[in-house]
Length: 100
Image 1 (spheres, rainbow, N blue to C red):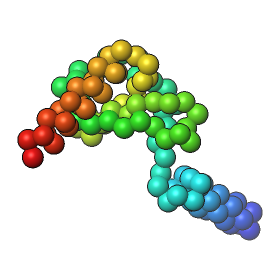
Image 2: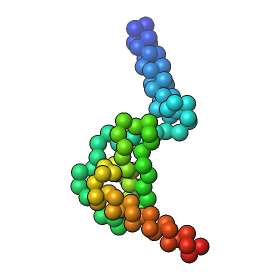
Image 3: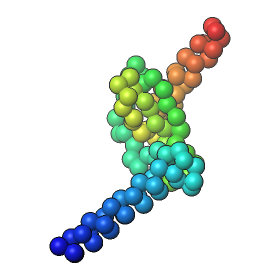
Image 4: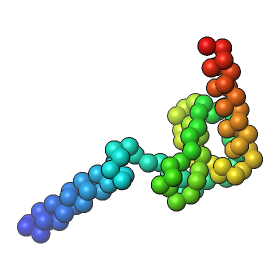
């Protein structure tokens, strides 16, 4: 019984430390999203509402597309279809800002 209590305590402490590290990388308090793999198929630009570039803290540069349903899709910024969607979204933002 004492062994299982000690093991449980260690698991709880390890989980707490793990969550703190993930929640505040480098003390920023803002979670960092990094792309470990890239989506290998093109996605329709009609499905994407916005995007952002991954943090410089990530090991590889990536683009994270956010779809209408809220899904996050990692893509390679060197791929032409990725650049095309980014340009479309940037142009939409410019048109909206000009009309305001």
